[in-house]
View 1: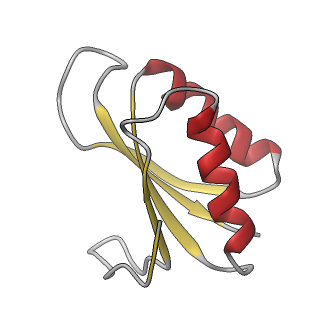
View 2 (view 1 turned 90 degrees about the vertical axis):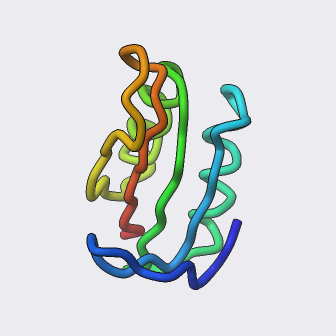
Amino acid sequence: MNKEKPSNESGKTDFFLDITPETCPMTFVRTKLMIEQMSPGDIAVVILKGAEPLENVPRSVQDMGHSIISLEPLEAEGEGDGVYSLRILKT
């Protein structure tokens, strides 16, 4: 997990986490640990892959009370198996 990842055209990014090699439940565990290090108003980008993380991580982040800014595909693969970029706002 990196702090101060350069911002992109979508806006600032304070934290970055690539969980593509992980499987559930570690995908959310690693995301939760990163969010705990963030301050309110910080934005994180999480790169995830696979149907289960794609469904569970955004839902769990929202259940914690944080906001999903965007969820966008980075690669076009089979439905639900592609790589996605999830932008999170810590509230």
